[in-house]
Length: 521
Image 1 (tube, rainbow, N blue to C red):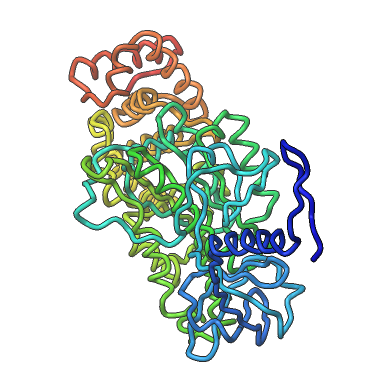
Image 2 (cartoon, rainbow, N blue to C red):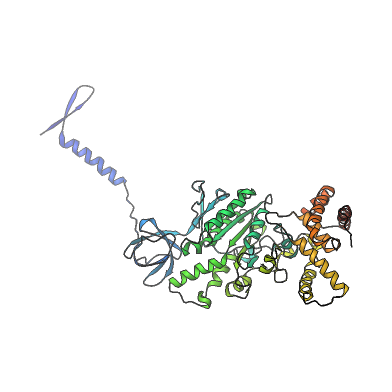
């Protein structure tokens, strides 16, 4: 029998070879006994057909709705149509290399996005992937893209204002935190400009801003980002972008992903503003997906659940009760109209979902009356209850009188002879319109707005030539800030305007007009 030798302290001891083999086998068997291999099952499917942005496959019998499916090449898709024989998958990337016969498998993960403070100041895609040059987004939490809206018992009344910095909106169409205010208008009438100025005005207001770009050109998103950086608004902002050259599935999930990101901050007790730019393109992307998935078309070829698609998105905006965090999510959806037709399918759907609408007029835009808000067709159904008291003291009849002025101005164009009262109404209305004009990127603080609106509403500017109203307005704002700083601070803090405060403001306005050589009427 062959022998083996093993060194010992006393010398070398010979040992049979089969004993060493048995010891080695025992060691191997002990290791195998301690090892428990886990069996992992994968549902594998096979692509049946591929279309623009969608794919049909078979074999994924246990897949869940909105579950991520990984296809060949690492391409991700979302299970969308769960038919008995096939599964319709929305592709979340370029599917040029995908062909019939390709394999796919379930991931077991519902579509989600990263959330957290690490996203502040970043530009990300609909899946949370970084689109800027600041490296990967390193967050510690992910949440589903589709989440149920807060229940009614968790909601509180809208009672706090969200200042846009725009005189025509804050005074006549106020917005409250937790409100949903639709911005409607034709192409190139300043819809995005209003949203941008609103974001810029949240500086030092402790409001997180999320801007969701849907179907817009990359250059437009880059320009928006440039303005945020230039005005130091990027540190409290997040941009979620799905450009027009991306698949329709990415454009479809973008607003839901942006809302999930915004809800994270709301649930932390913070105030959030989200802008959807715009939901008309989102509806078109959903229509494209639905038609490719062979869903029944309805009015204007939109599927019948397009109302539900937008309502379940916008219902997530709310003001939470203090016992549920006390945070708020204010939504400013943007929709495009054709030739001012606000009775079209998508605009009427959104009007019925939201709490008011800001309608922009292309006629006013062409005349240079910016922001081109059509006061007569615009309304805020909730924000008036959250408006600061100082606004109510100076704008009580301003909306009605301004609307009457616009109607009277149209009537006066026919050369009709007007009585003295009508002439006075016209002159005052023209000056109010000049006061409501505002340059872009120049949001105005509360105290300055109230002061100039008081001067216009009381008719103190009636003796000022229309061409000089802007100059006098600047002088009034500067004088009030210098001479009545305490009153300005009280107005900013939400205190009502007393009669003494009103008298002080009127005195300063009168002094400015007298120094400018203008007549106070």
